[in-house]
Length: 286
Image (cartoon, rainbow, N blue to C red; front, top):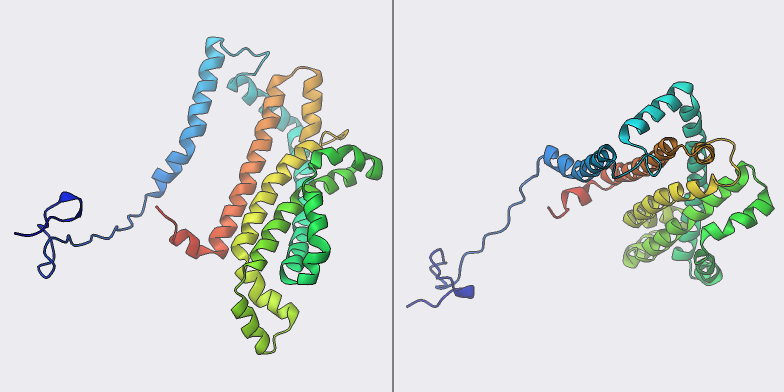
């Protein structure tokens, strides 16, 4: 009489040399259709849109609180045909792009220095960690005093907000680089700059892309705050003007534009991950 298999199952498909043991069945990775994945991603936004349409049509949501989708679409056409939306979008994207470029570069350099050099960590890390705990929104009045109400203050605010996520990710990624590999390359006579370029940065690439993704998201959040500094152009200026006239349709358009900018930034980060680290996509759990 054969012993029962683990879990109480009788070993009908058991190995004859090991009675009672069920032959393991490895899980086969079944590729999911792209259409299914896209449909699941769109399900949440579509449900929200339908609820919005129903609430506006039934009167549950008045136009004084939030404009209906039809009014928002009409306001979008109005802003686009007049050229106001295109100009504002160009100004806002330029601000966010410049701030992100400066902030991510500074954070990357400081992260590599503190992660790769013990002296750099001892000199810089404690001060940077202290500055990182300061909410960047609290710096708005100070930056207005230092840089005035021009574009410099807005770009600097975005740069400060985006530098710290990149710094933390870069420093952690560099510290986690395989030290044996670093010592091996040093023994072959590789210099510091070549070591950072050829060994450290590629090894820290997952952490760097995660930091870039966080920085890109924060650049949109900081952009909203930066455009509240007496802006005369940009999406924030459109929002301020619409607020004065209680145009909830234009306010909603501007909020959706901010959301789309953030979604676009996240999409760019995902594309970079797919291009630079294709093995992570192939090895992801399905």
